[in-house]
Image 1 (cartoon, rainbow, N blue to C red):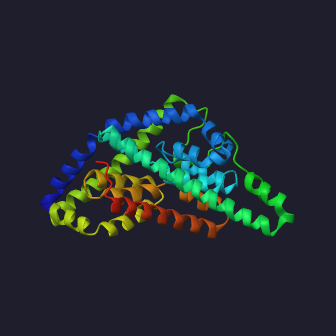
Image 2: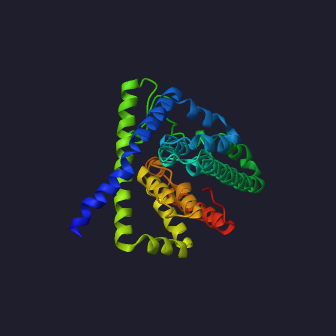
Length: 318
């Protein structure tokens, strides 16, 4: 077994090293884009009103965890609706797109997966807000004397609980999320891009090492047969991995999908709930623990449901 270690390390290194230049360029461009946009995207979501889920779903598709974290903070301060929060969490790409680009996946495949995540985010966001509006309407019918107060609370929910305030335009709430302020220079952008590239490269190397080891000892055919015979289990497991609040979750799921170890349904269930550190920020910022748990459970159920639907319909991207 010891004599296999150099062989395993060599294969894992070969599978990782060629990705580094692509990841570095991609992250540099993404950091520059985030720096250029500043905090205007967050203001756009706040001002979107009933169209919040649509705007949030589109912005969430941009890689990195910044938008999911910002969405969690905005929801905690009652500046956006629950549907808007779900839209941004479901559409968040995290590390999926950079890995696709590094692996030179066909752009039709990338566009299809990102587009599906955005559409699902919009559908679920509008559906959730629609249900909440309907429930509010019923409450108003039963208590007309509270109509004005309840209507104002729903339409401008950022004023609910005066002690809670939305963050200012120049404040980054989550330093672990690679946030860049409006004053960030090119040197800081380059350092952040290099740091992010190293983090993801290490994760990819470790995943590749584990996969190579599994293939060597269990056999590729045996592993493929297990996943093929248990697609439902893979969907539930992938969604569970996706809830892990760091970039490693999306890297693992994406890499397994690219290696043919996960089917489309399992890949989608995991990546739909893979919102980076957005969930961590939600639990840190939102004082309603029960509400946070319900959101987490709803997110997991949504990922599993859409994964099972895509599997049942036999939809594939590759």
